[in-house]
Image (cartoon, rainbow over all chains, first blue to last red; front, side, top):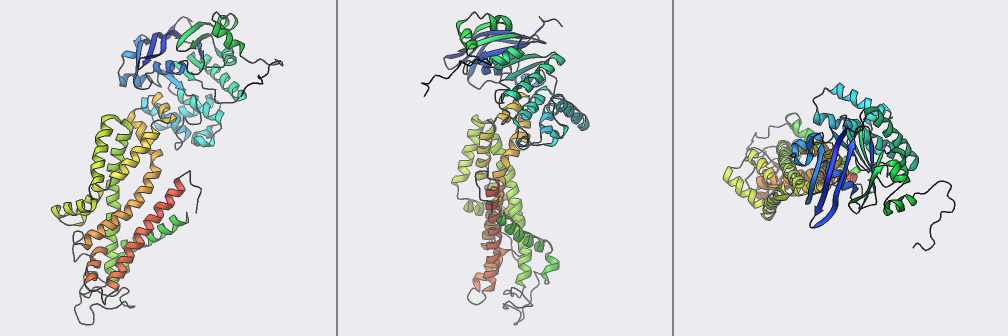
Length: 269
Length: 270
């Protein structure tokens, strides 16, 4: 696969609400088979940037710039056309596994929802596909008929991943998808995502504020602060040779194993 | 839970005996016997609830009357359910000017004295049981509409609805598959409570001569006869009155019980 084969390109994205600019001149591109990590503090505009790819930003936000997916400018599509891209070509895995599933619907039905909406397929065919996905995210086939409240946080996150992958999208956006989980389960999920990514040659946009995950999964890194990209480059260059002062401070904050001298200041109230 | 069971058991008994009325009744509810010792008989083993001024068996008439009351209750509520859920859902989900228009209509409905509106419409359309059902249904959807709208307003902001939207699920499908099933709990409660009030309205209309027309029996029009003889034929007033009371009470018990069982914030599970 040619690594320069870009699938999604964001160019000069600017988002305004009222007169206030919340995202300014953001540009980056995603390529098949590569993972782009979008890093930044809370409120830096990471999530809004991701949402604007599928035109999911809240009302009254005014967007400028262009987002090109395989030659089409997504900003120029109408509601119906963009709805057909959601889930089919570009999928988002949400942040909160606890609340992102319909509490009264069985897990299998929820995974099948995307197929039912976008494709005409027979019932056994759909079930086949859902079971295949459950196996892929390493869940028991019995999960098919469980309700979301019967699953653990990690299992729910796997289900959400399966929901996002059910229609074989080419771009996967993970919006802090592992933040709500504890570290050991986080690691499992990250490994799972990496395997699936390699297998399917997915383009991934991975939104996080955790540099240890960036180090594990990313090929390229964008650092955002207050709506502006302050640093953009390969993982190696950003992590080991950061040019921006803010990036340097962020990386310095990453706790390291065996760093015994690290202590919380006493004067924290 | 106990209350639901008691209420449901009473309704079941009434419903089954109403359905099997020809078997249970023992007398033709329309058959008159104008001989001196057949009219206005006290309750006895022969006539459980006595006879009325035309010598008809009150127990049999009440069984047939139960058919009227229950079917008016259910059908009126189904009509108001369809209208209320539809308008409330559209209003809550889409918001904007659609919401504004529907809510103004609801306010107009609220500001009318419903009972007089129903009386007026029935007078124009002619008093019969179908008109009564339809009119009660058409005038009682406003509270349900507000309830459904409120549920939709909170549910549409929930994460699982946005995650369905992210998957490209259409608005119609989001409403039908994700929001509606989660909004139904308070709707069930409100439905059971409205069955009771629909039965009350029907009885009142029949009592005033605007509902089921004599000689066809209904609880309301047995009471109408009863009021003329209330001095010495107490059974003509007591039994239909009790029947209405018990039926409405049972529906309210089911409704209250459901509310407590379905409300996650309540820990009373009696």
